[in-house]
Length: 379
Ligand SMILES: Cc1ncc(COP(=O)(O)O)c(C=O)c1O
Image 1 (cartoon, protein in one colour):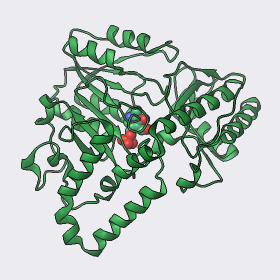
Image 2: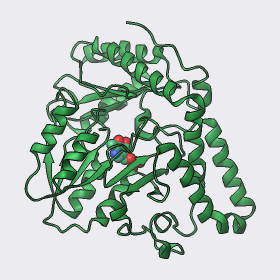
Image 3: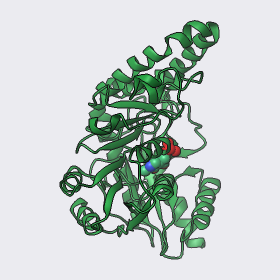
Image 4: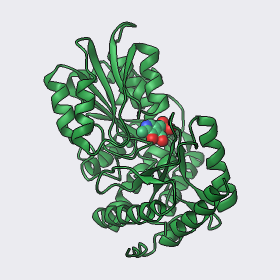
């Protein structure tokens, strides 16, 4: 097993504590110092002359959106800054004007707050996706098999949180479109991780910038197909309300816009480092980490999507069967091993997800693997 080389200068770009192995970039991201510096400068600018800052904010947000759109390959008038994926899911579902007995397809890999948003607005039908389904085609077939004549909308992960694999690939989206099903794609992990985050022309797609795109927390985008844009309501109706999507969605009266204004810097940093090199490094390191964990008795690697910076393995059947058990194991790993990972619950035994980022080093996964082997053996 070859040990991947570290990304040159990677750890130095972040302010992460050296006492902890941060192997969970996918949950909350981390902000590199050049982005954090710009963010602070913007806050200082707002503090120094609030009138000038806030009067100029709508146009500056539009300009920042244009730069983000260029990085993502999106139409600058077809995306809006939003706070996070959870908010974007709610804005998308509200735009669809669902009735309580409309049927919305979700999967059991879907993210809790996103699935709950659908369930609050319509009748959801949950398609089970066996984590061991071998590939994207098998996932696609399982989703299509879960459609009923009443399915109006499908809410699908672009990259699933627990199992770190592609669900809403372009072929699945095309098949749903052919069947007249509106698609809402949770691309929380896509910006900064995928070369073409908007592939497949979903009707609604949202992605966090504060995960893999190195933006400050509270930075995400919602992309909406032209036919639906006029239906997206502003979360806070304010002075830009008359201007419609995307400005009406973005402008929320006097609030903190500095994260959005700093967001293009994150994607710019990735481009400057070489997006292809960042992706190659991260996926190679995630592969290495998964191979180390696969050597632990009781851990089973799961099928994965090539090129992603996250990998998941199944834990022994007696572990993480509930959220409470998963949380307890996660905290035990943090306290005893000094490693941050995601432990996801599943009824017949949950899983562990590891992430890789340019600040990670192979030794951190070696430490996790050695510690976890002992921890699981101790019971
Ligand atoms: C697939 C997926 N969707 C949505 C979210 C929620 O993101 P946020 O907390 O930014 O709303 C997450 C967070 O980890 C996620 O993994």
